[in-house]
Structure formats: structure tokens, C-alpha cells
Length: 555
Image (tube, rainbow, N blue to C red; front, top):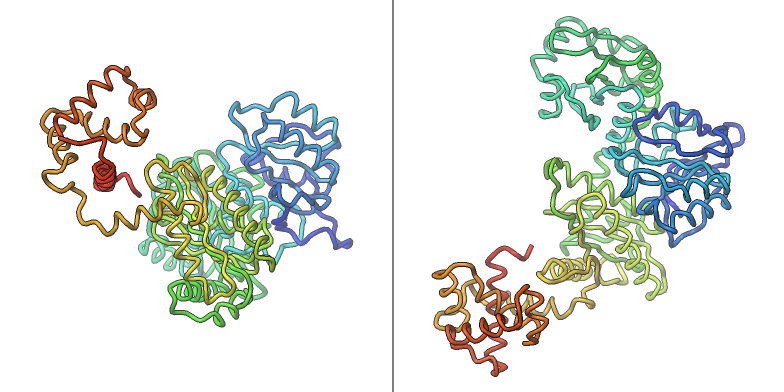
């Protein structure tokens, strides 16, 4: 197990936050307590994401059992193993039933480990960010390495503050540009909607506040400012974020549906102290992150320098490395736009990769992402196993968040960073094969889908998606167009896919075997196709594949 987002249990001078304090500052929006047989005074040293391949767990960790069904026997093992390792608590998802099974509750009580559940409306990625901020608010020292993904961390901080204060949050810079905002589910006021859509406070609003002397008061004040509700605008709280004597930005909280609670000002005051480190990191690493991304892209395109990427990331120029090509599933109803989806995907991949002993660089690309993995195991076989295990783990995480059709192509493990374009090409080929019709695997190396890759290359050399005129498949297409239903082409495709085996083909089509025999007789009569000829069958298969492409079935 890995992904410790706190510094660890080494500082005796500063006691860590207790589970009771953490739950208090987190509120009821993110976690639900099931049982705490040992009480809530246990100290939480940090957050760890479950990794079955690395079972070691430090004491005092809050273990996030991502991907473990609470109804399964595996959940019982996770709770017992966590208790033996001295975990502070175990957090599970809601599962299919939405209620914890009695056996799991009993196991937690017997093991003496607290058991919590993630609320249904709080995703794992958002929970990690909220817990990071919650631990700091509960008394833990801020972790300087907590901002592996700067913008993701700011959004996580905004979500955490929103949960703690019970309102809608935006984090803004000195120019009133929106750096992050909480994913509040309630209806929000028009001003917040315009601010988020424009990624900055509307100019007319900024001008009005400037003329009223509001910014002068905000930057000069060391405390939370309350702005009462006015017309359609709900009450707001705002506080400046400072580091030393320098103002870095501000945090705004707007009431969303209900009045802000009495403790909101105190919570926001504490959040401002936490936010200072995040904003400093964001400002200093924003340019660095862009330069790192540019260096990685250039290298993968075969035009960059391995030395530059090594300098920016610390990934050794000589050593096993690989590329993974990731495609999330089809967007679900209500999902955010493409830009936010890409950001969410990259943040998720960066967080999940942190659970493995690899050095990743995550790059957004069209409809997905690329992961550059460096510092893999020096033994080639172990390096390949690392890539395979990581890909299998990641595809489950991506599918859980974005949909069941997630696919990951695994690139060839290469010896140096200079060889990464070769790995990227094999990852892209593998991903394309996994997206082909009839392929049900979710993750694979190119060598595991070599036949599909070769077929795609053959089809790529053929021009057009319509079958050549006067061929049997062309006659069937014309017949279906005239008589409706498309049954002839569908029947031929199924018949060839099942090697002419009538019972299997009939089951696939959902028809009686005698009805299928009648169809086969009719389609050979209409098309003139000689099913006894290997060449005729091969040509028909190729033309049917091209028809599938023309119909948009290949992603």
C-alpha cells in the first residue's frame, strides 16, 4: 500500500489529529461512521489508498479501500488485515445495496478497527483532496508534497472547504480570476454561475467592488468579511489568503440553499491558513508543470530531449520506462464538459499512480490521456509486470469514475527515455485494438492483440467504406436497403463470425436454426456468395469490417 499524503508518523512533538476531530471538521457530507469499537481518540497519521500488490501498511493510516465491494469476502480480509497493521480506520464505498452487511460490521467490531463509508455523492478523487485539507484543519502539519497535481489540489481544497462550511466555494487570485471552485450540487446564485462560466468574477462586479473600496478592505483585513444577502445574491463570506505579509488571493463562500452555519467563519479562517501553502505551490509550480508537460510531449513525438525531461522530472534517462494510453468510457449523463473531464481524468490517474513505486507524467490528449512511466524495475520481466499490474488497477479506477467502457493500451517497456516514442506507438496501437468491435478486454499490450492490430493495418490500406460494386456484400447491402431491416448483412456477419456453425449463429441472432438455414439460402441466392470458397469468405469478412468502420462502430 502507498500514496501516503501526510508526512508520516515521525514527528513526536506534534500529535496527529484524532479520528473524532477529523470527522468533526469533515462533517457529514463526505464520510459516514459505521462502527468505532476502539473509540474515536485514535490518531490519524495519514491517508493510504489500498493497493493489493503492496500489502504493507503503516500504523495510524486511514485506509481508503477503493474498488472493494463491502458485500464481498475481500472486504472482511481488508478490515482484518488493516487491524493487524494498526490502521486508524477503513473507508469503503457504498456498494450495490447501499447499507453495510452485518458480517462486515461484526468483523470490524471483532478486529477493533473503525469502519467508515464514503457517501454516494462524494467521489474517491474528491475524497482524497477533502481528507488532505481536513487533516490539516484537524491539526496535522501541512504536507509540502501534497500538491502533485496543483489545480487538482486546489479543487480538492475548494470541495473540502465547501463540505466544512456548508456553502459554495471559489478560490480566486488577486485579479479575481477563479483558480478553483467546489462542485456544489445545490442551485447557486446567478453571480456564482457567471463567475464559474467565465472563470473570473464579471468585470462589472469587480468594478463595483473596487469603487466601493471592498478590495482595499479585504487586502488590509486579517479576518473574515461577511457580506449579507442582497436581492437574489445570498450571504457570502470572504477571507484573504496570505503568506507572511504577501496577499496571494482569496476564498469566497456563498450560501447555497440554506444559511451558512455559525462556525463557518472560524472554519474559513483556518482554511485560509491551509490555502496559503496551496496557492504558493500553485504559483511556483504552474509554469514548471507546463514546461514539464511540454518536455514530455516533445519527447513522445520524437522531437524532444531526454536530458530536459530528466532535469524537469528526475526520471533517469537510462532505465526501463513505458507509456500507457488511456481512454475513459462513454460520458455519463450530467457529466462535465470535455475540458473538465480531461482534468478530472488526469487528476485521477496521477492520484492512482501515486500508489505504485513509479514516477509518472500524465498528459491530456484527445479523448483521453497518456501516462509516461519512468524508473521502472531494473529487471525487464519485473518492469513488464509493473506496467501490467498498474494498467489493470488503473482501468478499474477509470471505469468506476467514467464508465465501464474504459480501455488502456500498454506500451512496450523500453530501455531509455529516447525510446519512448516506440512505446507510445505500441500503446496507441494496443488501445485502438481494444476499441475495435468485438474486443472485450479492457487492458492489453500490443503483443496480446497483435491479430487485431494487423487487421486494422490491412483495413487502413483499403480505400472507402462502401463495398466494391458487384461483389456479394454490395448486393446484400443493396437488398437490405430496398427491403429494410438489414437482416441479410447482419446474418452473414454472424454466420462468418461463428465459422458457419448453425446452432451458435442462431443463438447469436436469436432465431431458430431452421429460420437461419432459410436466411442463409436466401442470402446466397440474392448475393451470389459462394460460402465454400475461402477467398470469397475472406473478401466478405474484410468488406463487412469496412462497413462497421463506416457505421462508426470503431472508436
